[in-house]
Length: 268
Image (cartoon, rainbow, N blue to C red; front, top):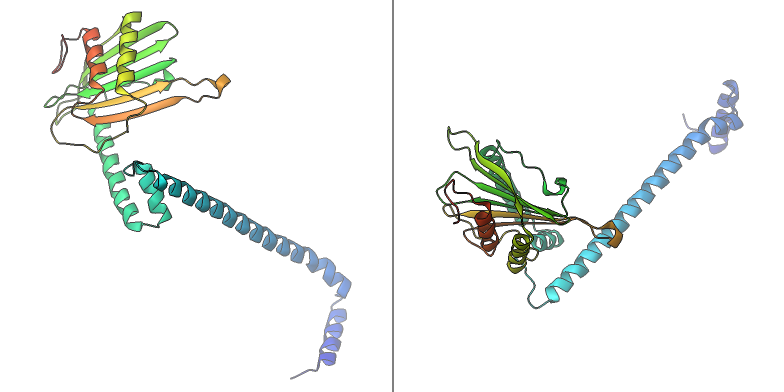
């Protein structure tokens, strides 16, 4: 049945008053809900605009940053951080698929490494309460006895913590073979510091891309306590090398100072 506009108004009024719903009551009942719905819509649109603005700023700065790096004549484009940023900018899905595979392999390798030395529980360098702390983890070729050497310095006191252990291999369990501390003289610390400076520990890349099945490997971790008074945060570095590197001079010195004569590798 059809109604004209005037007839519809009359029908609405008849229905409203017959159910005791006046236009005023209608407003009081439904306007708060409508106001709340409007607020939700406005807030949603505002949040969306803010997110779009954040993404726009992020992408703009990233584009400018990469353009600046690309303008440098000899910038190291093999750096993984550069590669990730570049791939993100170019939406390079192939790169990220390959990166996922590499991350998975690295996790598997790390898991194997944690099983190999599960009998030692070395604290993190920043938990040692030292002003400076450096750790070398050395594994000689065809040997299952890694060497773990940690050097710390606090004030005028320097200490060497030596740890030799048998890593887990096949059915052979992880076992500590030798562990002790040795104080360093001022001259020994000075010589060690010079070796680190010559190795350029803070300028070395985390990984140089050279890997192999056989051969020795060395991992170096460095820490320097920050100074809030000068707005200097804690400083860390991590370097991993296969075969020999500039870090071996510092390690060789520590092995000589340690006096260790056990295991597969020692220095007279």
